[in-house]
Image 1 (cartoon, rainbow, N blue to C red):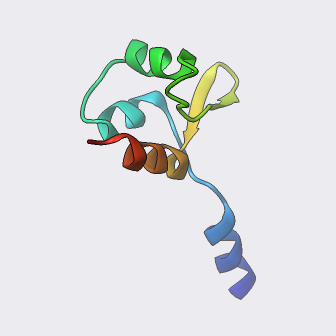
Image 2: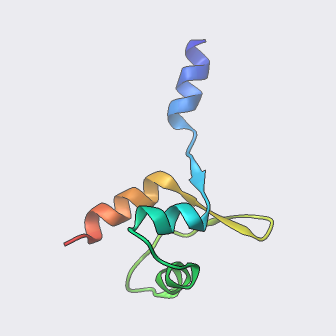
Length: 69
């Protein structure tokens, strides 16, 4: 049981583009694509699961925390 809880703490959670858009306050898939392709912004890179990009939730939250005004 304890080992399972340790794995849960260290296993990153991933979410699709729709979650990222909702988290950022409403945007489109093309907005996320532009953020991803802009090297100045340093938006987190997704993990590809087939053709579906999945974003690490914690990385997106950390990025948003440092880029909000």
